[in-house]
Length: 85
Image (cartoon, rainbow, N blue to C red; front, side, top):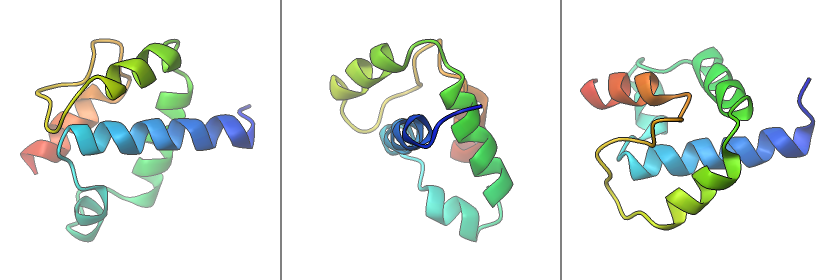
């Protein structure tokens, strides 16, 4: 089970990764491409990642948009689907 602080950190990492991917999560939800359970699952996948520090460093070194997240990103497939609409 994940503690609340860890989930908050990973929600922030997921949100930042979405921004770097030029994915508008709010618009994806409004358009029906992303549900609240999908978002919950994405944050949980992120929370299970073994590379959160590397991810934060990687994010800090990027500018918008990036072509794809790092290979270890647990949400690569989701970001690809959301970019394709």
